[in-house]
Length: 108
Image 1: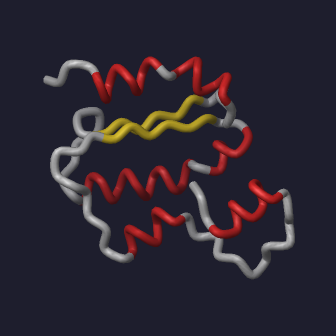
Image 2: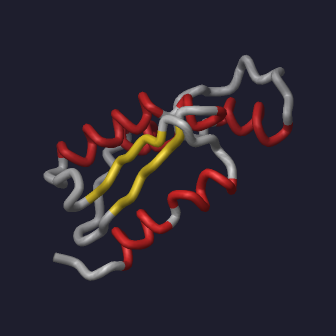
């Protein structure tokens, strides 16, 4: 998940980001009291390779936050890890039908 330091490192390619915050933006939003809008469904997924391999702890914190607001996993949101997937278009294409079916398919 994006943070000041991650953006500096991956977008510019610069490693000189020691003074930048490593806290993912979403965790800052949660700490500031962000609330989930009513009636919204979410899909989160990430791979186990490349940039995605760093997302696990942040996804766990987001899942805790969602459950803490009464959302039900696999009903109100999906959080899925694809261990062999990387952070690239090929990996996203291979799993695109799953979030599209969840988000735009017929509801229960």
